[in-house]
Length: 163
Image: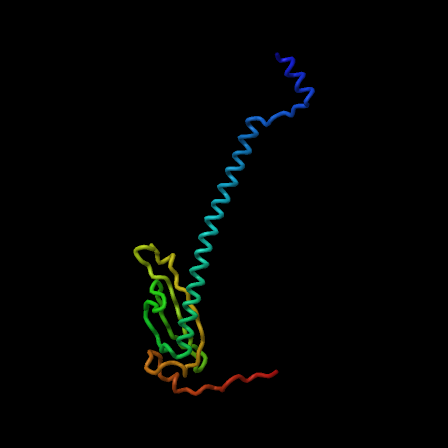
């Protein structure tokens, strides 16, 4: 019975099959690769969500800055307040004098409000801040800035430069 099988293999040129060890090693490599790809996808999803949050924060910050620069909202310091356009976010406005005459740093910061549905820790919920330096003459009267800055005249008007 063995002799016909040997003759049959010789006539048909039978290839040797994979051993059990080779199959186990190949399966292990495949499983490790799939596990790694799943982890990379999870990391990519977290980074995508973080980038989405930063893009929303940047847009909200730019919108609030535009409202302040256009004079629609008063340009004065504001404590933490919910945003009217998106109640899931809060903002604050800060004004800080600079060493340059008649120049004030306007700082608008936004962050997502922690809620019962979204568990956000202070470490996971940083402020996104946009800064802009504006003329002290644009600031609303009666703000908490020192009054001597408003009384000073600027050293120069407009841009003075050479071509």
